[in-house]
Image 1 (cartoon, rainbow, N blue to C red):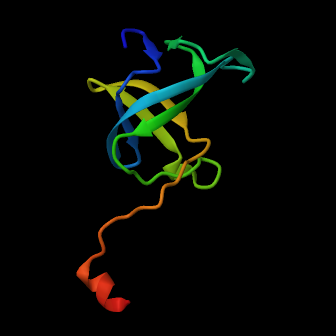
Image 2: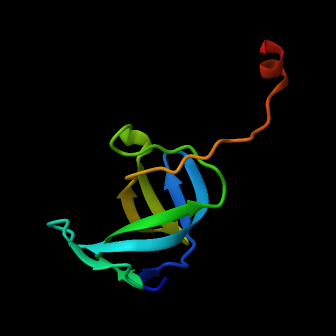
Image 3: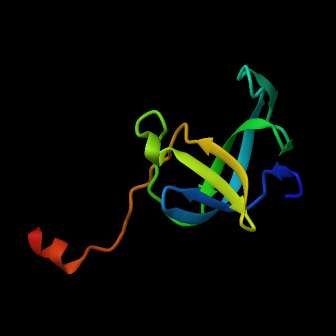
Length: 110
């Protein structure tokens, strides 16, 4: 990532107390930082100082919310080699039904 982020970049996503490896699946729009107007659709990369909309995929399940519904769980930082590379807010979350393990105490309550 020397100075730019492309769609295959895989940094660490810090959201509240979670630190999960993630990848930029797609950079959908490059925007003007001040006005918020879309400057480019599906750019190949974004440089330092640019604003963008991107789809991030975490490598493990993590608990996040959209910034509009719950701001503390909707802010994140993207870090690489202990340096903050990007910061942002979550616009939307694709929720997947967890097929997680049930603890013994939870199973007894059923």
